Image: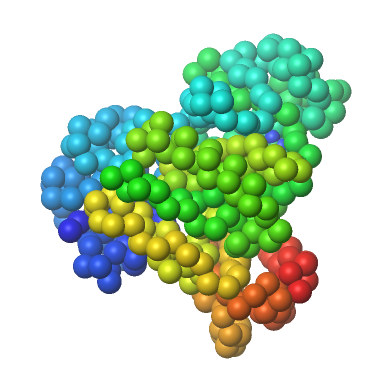
Length: 377
Ligand code: ATP
Ligand code: MG
Ligand code: MG
């Protein structure tokens, strides 16, 4: 079987690696130039996009910001999963909010703004601690602005002056004082079968995910049930096939959806060592119509993103339970270069191993690793 993935970054690469033992060949589309490439070597396969799409058993995507003409072209093949409706719900924050509202799913209080003057109304309604998000093309905190004080409003309006808000409106959200961020990664098969990984606790810094710990410590059964209920509603509404991630803010015993990602997700990378079948294998299985693999986890896991950093002491790999996943990209500030998965029998051992790892890594690039580790011990 062959699977074609739109996008040729690390997520396509990890799907390729997961497909290998199953004898499933994954190729990727470099969306900028419509070239079909090997997801690891990035070498062109020599196929045209039309040929690769024709030969594929299934077509999927590693990111949601896909040009609409390409999306339509793939939808026409009848084998594009999770489908353009789901991709667009993740790509366009206005659609995403509409979907959440339609399904009665709790989310962050917000206003849609397509004219800078409406910002005053948003401030009147939501207060002056706001986070403004471009409705399209945002990720890793890009395309976001923060307002922390009413007096900065005119400065912010000037900053936004160059944007055409009628084409790309802003979603203006109340800045929440949440207890923590968690995410649920799950998978739905072609037959509608659902499976969930344990929920992960996610630590962000400057709008970017730094560390995930799974299963999220001290998560009540009620919160897990809330998250799975939300996931099920969304997946069924979208007739979803494949891996889906839902990001939440936890406030007390309530979960609010932050956003959804219609694809394998950074907060699910821990499953590569921490679960019976990883998210990448399960996505490939689902889009190929194969049975979904067991999502059970072993012990406790953490995923530590390597962001804008590329010099390592090799001996850190001698720490038990530490696994390096390197994406083979050129280093740039804020760029996700790879990740570590760390596993322990329990949270204490996980914390000790993370602490040992932190001794080999600079605090400038891994600002929360040691404190997260200590919190587990
Ligand atoms: P991703 O890479 O996850 O797709 P993104 O650019 O789509 O990121 P969001 O997930 O919307 O951005 O926001 C990034 C981070 O910013 C969140 O994980 C959270 O830490 C913070 N954040 C976003 N919205 C709010 C909010 N309303 N209140 C407080 N913090 C927020
Ligand atoms: Mg996002
Ligand atoms: Mg996010």
